[in-house]
Length: 261
Image 1 (cartoon, one colour):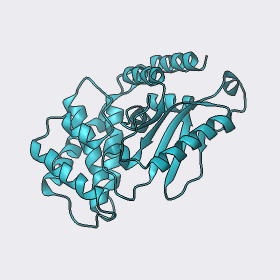
Image 2: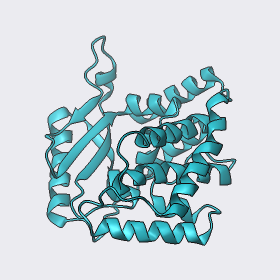
Image 3: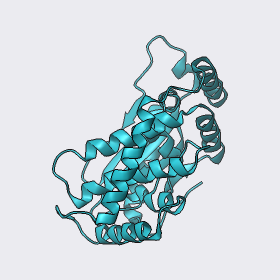
Image 4: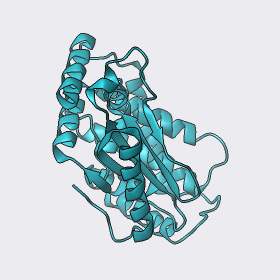
């Protein structure tokens, strides 16, 4: 599977492909899933946005049959353009079990550098079975609250707006715990009024042609929407887990053994 929009720089994409091939060769692992994260995948890039490639890797069985396991993260050199790093399969599975929304987002990115669809389907099925809606909601709630601290800029507001949209998506989909990753899709799959979608689309267009959005205020309709959703999501703070921890661990082990074995 590969999904690369024309808006991505072909030279940069080629270098990301090269780095992924190098990771597999140098570390003796396979990379069944590699995607773009960050503002490009979230649906609101700036002209100077860097590339945030994230990947999941799987080693041979011997990698996991040792008393001294290696690092569960592989990183490549970081610079102004490239931010390419990934997680070992056990790390991803355990984080998903704990309700880490970032790990789930990687499986739902609209930009895919390379991916095994069966691997993705396996992990999404696992995530749907074990993830606590309340844990996912708290993740987005806390992300938004952190971004509300400090100097407020239009750029930072996007990091409040997307979590707010994810929380609205969860409210509108009471039987699902895996929101889409990008802001336009989140809004399109919710019951928000058209004025909110329109205001968000205008702000995204502005960001796409402006290197620095500055410290101006976001549109009132969007600020009110975000505040309302964050206030409503406060109810998730006190929600108790619904999943059986033992069953979650068994499910994680089952997926891990099937993929590695």
